[in-house]
Length: 172
Image (tube, rainbow, N blue to C red; front, side, top):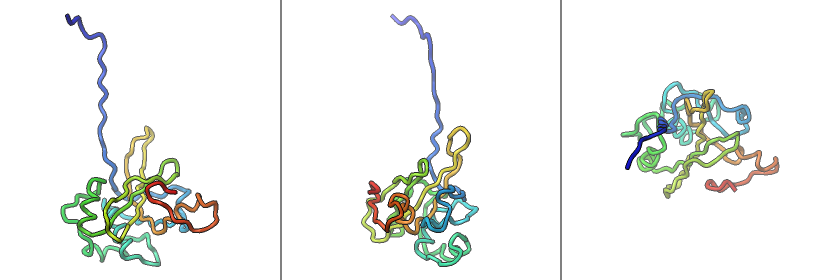
């Protein structure tokens, strides 16, 4: 026999998948030219594509300027991709462009793997997915940054000794 409900509580959470949405400044520990990062200053939601183009067509001067990459927009295939790019679209971008992507993120200024491709393409583009959080620790914005030199990014782990090559899955 059912008597009644004494207490009932419902928690609702809005799922917001991470995706690149525009420019975010690098954290202080990573905001220097010796960290192997290229943070393209874009005002649109195409930061993933701009990083992809910057990987394919690197420049020596002013690598953070969007104007260096706009002329190559037609050289990559983003047919059917909605911007900002979410992680579930990366597999399709890999197939369209025959390139694999490895995405890393920061947690308390520690680099962590976030998406590691299983594809067999020879070219590998590495990116860092930055997250901007509000005062309640909710992610308000995210942004892709090209990793131009993974060893430089991981330099703090080497204690300043030499260039090392890391496994992208375990970072050892």
